[in-house]
Length: 204
Image 1 (tube, one colour):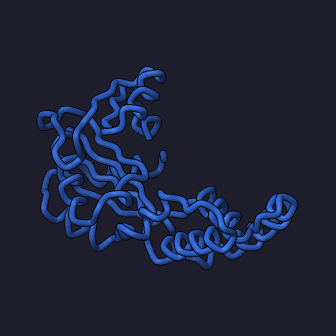
Image 2 (cartoon, helix red, strand yellow):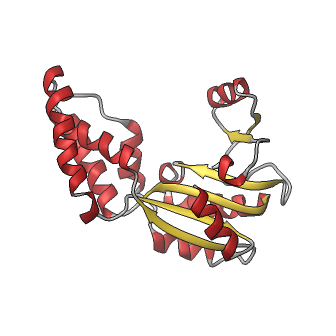
């Protein structure tokens, strides 16, 4: 995303010190926060506020505060992407079922998706209607890498050979039917103009 925006001066805001340490090693600026609901920064502190695969791990009643905080601290716009929709929910549910079936450790990130509920378009539009700073665009997209990962995990039993031979074959079959399935992620881009939104979307 920073490439699409042509920005190199990046600040990572996180509550996890390990994530901040890793970011510092990549020469990012870092800020350790207490939560995303109340960010200790002045209005318009940053050009853009970006969130990648985070909103689905936030309780529904907290998402509005986080989105409005992102808008408050940004001068030019915000960008988010996250899994959304019934097809994405189905993938998550089937993945957890497969892990249980094969007695594997349950993936806590995917459990988060199920327990907190994936964000949906209506939820986002309702929140964004409470601000007038930016105009926004919501776009449903496919994430083939993520979907293929889930299908491999869902269809592969414990056998090492079957996992590396039959699972990719099954994934190819699923891939051929991808066009019949809806998007599994939403992109949210909000900025000062609809024209800028479209321009950035084309570069992502």
